[in-house]
Amino acid sequence: MGGHDAEGAFNGLFTGTMLRVWNNGRFKGDYRTFHKQIVKHMPPVQTPNFFTTGPANAGLEAQAPFTI
Image (cartoon, rainbow, N blue to C red; front, side, top):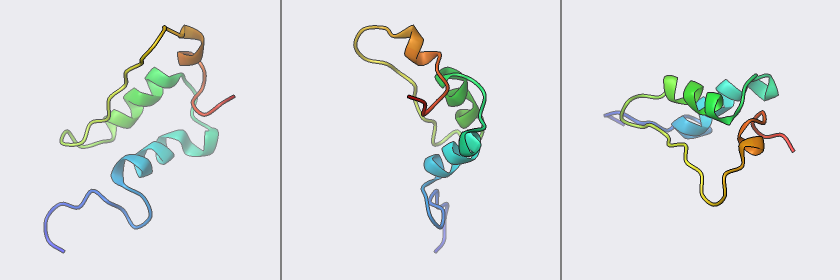
């Protein structure tokens, strides 16, 4: 195929980047830092957003990603 393909062999570009940043749970930081690190490794034509809906929940946002 010609052209720019953002899909990888197993995951899309965002999913692959997110998994690399998460590093099997070894990522240290909160959700905003996680988002910033993902964006840092994405091309400018595909930039994920970070926004919340509903009541603010600073405790949740301060957690490490994917923890319960």
